[in-house]
Length: 409
Image (tube, rainbow, N blue to C red; front, top):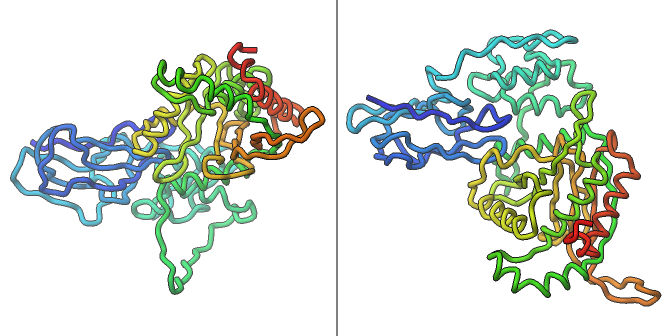
């Protein structure tokens, strides 16, 4: 009897995935728990393992297909027998998921219309209802049979408001010139693009700058580097200093750690610190939960673990959600100054940059000091300029006198 290969639960706020790559072909033998197929979600790549040993008997969702939790990707047989693969299949013929529920119409505009040829997928239908947009405004989608996906809705909402009242006109792709190549954007890259545009469209984003003298932190790090690594098994980096400094500042200025939910402001009594790290397919932001309870060693270990698993594509979905504030370090790539973009629905993000020796006036004399520019982008709807500037000054003070961080002052 054949065993179905099902799409697993994808995690919080993730309702669809794209079949990125089949690791086994029809007719190939597999072991139990051996990776079979990679699914690409809006956040990470998920491996689906074989539910049992046997032979891949059928593939019902080919690469590029959009799938939802519970759907059958294919099946595994005990061995031998007929094997089949649907050459153009993009979804299982008999999905295990429940029948698509009827979406309640929004208040101001009629709900998504199931227009033949571009009916919305469940996740897309909910987004359309929340946005007060009908399916016929979006037009033909990119999912199977022209159905509208979540990505299609995000693309539509990112367009200028003037175009939102009419179906978008079909635009033919431009002809490629010599030396050009067209490559379809990955799901992760599309999500990054949509979220960055969403942040600019929805938040009143503003950036304030300051600079910090890294001399004291560098001296402390050099003094205790060896004994720290010997005791804790991890190197003492600068990220732990900045995490601790931000935690202290967020306690004093909680609006920077808050978010807007409709007409309410949600204040957090915890700090779930997002740490931006580079992965093979783009930037991801794993979350350091309850950073206020962690010491320097625990922070360094967690960040090092995030970086390694991001490069290996092994981050879990639950590790990428729930952040309340984010730190991004462009300095590791040589950036001297930049304006980071908010990570919705968060209201603040700190940008670190390259440490560079510069002449500074110290006690009436010119000294060469290791300086770093800091940038805080914030949502001006709930964070006032005074709060943002004061927050950044508080971070600066913590880094320039790291003893304050260690003594929790």
